[in-house]
Image 1 (cartoon, rainbow, N blue to C red):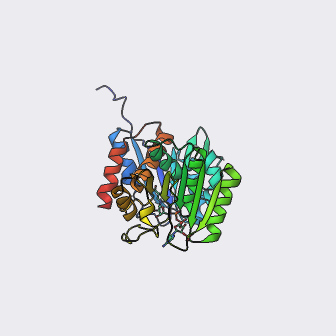
Image 2 (cartoon, rainbow, N blue to C red):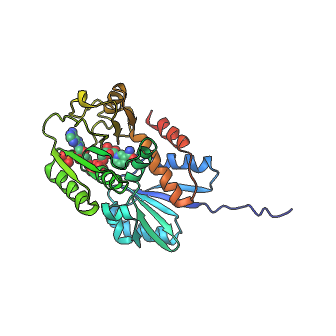
Length: 286
Ligand code: NDP
């Protein structure tokens, strides 16, 4: 019998390192794409204690991982174990996607790139004015990435003043972007000249699905694009209300799927099918 030259039991490896990580749904989303594109690749969900992060990265190198995602609590700590950073990861000071390029492990950040991919499919970000609620990790990633994509002005609205002014300062100093900070201590009225409105807080995340942003919803105009980072449930109060008011909306699930698409492109070079990935996540969230 002729030897089957296609026989190969060695799969290419990717993963997410985090702690806790058991409830992270990235594996089923990414592996749905691997199956769809007939890639002999695996994506493992690996719990890594902070004390073992250096060994885990060394292990990934030794075993030739094509790359891995980093989630809480490793997004900043992983940087010292890498060989270089992409531009936005360097600006944010946080990495959520490590990519092997030749012998080097390079840190990228796809949190904000997923958002910009969703935004750019609806409008050119260049010259737009954005209002963003929140100043945590998601807000930082979105702020940096929309700044690189050419928005002309950002208003950061946040409850905690220190965190808000720190993010505003970073965007101003590193991206040369005009930024206002507004402390969120009363019902926020959205300025009429706003083009893009983003919730980058955790308000509305499961299980607190009824939570609402403290906004005068009457000030949201149909010309505004409204986006929410909350992936579960995707139809948040903000998304539903904005859609009812005639706005173009982007939900957090799209942003999450886009991040996966970007990660797969980095690791495999393949343009993954976003619909297959979104359906895999919807099955889990439902
Ligand atoms: P952080 O803990 O870093 O930041 C949370 C932010 O939410 C802070 O600005 C905080 O304000 C604000 N916030 C929380 N609760 C309230 C409240 N009741 N009223 C006003 N502000 C509030 O979290 P992350 O930035 O990492 O994540 C935020 C959300 O983004 C999460 O729900 C996460 O699921 C989602 N996310 C989605 C992604 C996607 O791809 N769809 C990617 C990454 C994150 P303060 O500073 O005043 O405390």
